[in-house]
Length: 445
Image (cartoon, rainbow, N blue to C red):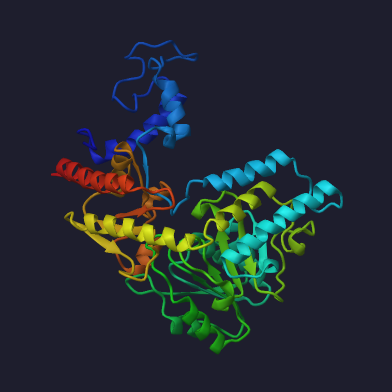
């Protein structure tokens, strides 16, 4: 059973003790409660004794916890495991030994061809023209480029209260200078009112930021309605849509939305980390965030990460011929199962919109138990999950998203599935959550 007779705080300390055991020989063993050295083992240099054979295994597990058999990964909304076809595309790039694609020799032209092929795959996936795809290091950079570029067009920006911290903090940094921002509230499901977003636009508004769907609770915004309302009020205002949470899980057509800018990150749907894109409407010129070279048509300086770009393209190609719809349908079945089984447990309530939500994640409010304890109990049961509460960053801050929704911002659990999720993973998560809460609540009684 999760917990092993420990208090919530003791459970939470396990991970920190594990790290301490690697650094020092005088801490408690993270798995048994024994002091390191109470089992047979060789002496460690610098004092202390390592547990016989265990320190190496523990060190390996901390490096790669998913290498342990019997694990069930339900944190795809944070990052999704790399698809096999993505690895193949990246390995092919590395094996070819490609050159700088900006040069004129044969090796460079081959590299350029493969980058442009991947660019077309990304464009096709998201309903964009290939010239509208600007490769970046990920959605965080894409967002920063959108925010910074819009700042030259006006001293005011508008955003919803549930935007990702990459949007919120980028806008707040501008506001620390001579810029201003307006934050528009949401309802209890996390949805923003399109009319309120439009009403927040001022004469010097440079951009309006609206996410496609929320990264914590999965609520899908009325993006088309928001854009239409904003265009009616101010035809020239830039509209930036953060689609990082939705990309690869919902049908997205950049051209149909009428947005000017859209941020995407490949690692959210089985692509490699460290690569993403900013979709920029044709004809729109922004002051680039990174300068110093003419890469990406002088919109993003720096040598292209060719292997990652090839992997990004391969991840997008996985959604061709109905692949996106098939994965979304399977994900919906999995999250519906998780949601229904979780709601059968006392003290759990769902967060986010009941129907208009992303297919691959479910967010739950859990009464009376700290999310840190739940996450670690699940982890010990072999289930990887996430919370938007304070344990997400080991800070003491509650989730700004949940606060904006007016729900308990301190006690949430997010379970998210993806392309590699199996029925067995879902069963393990549902059973693990039931057992973890039963044990933790028993300890509190």
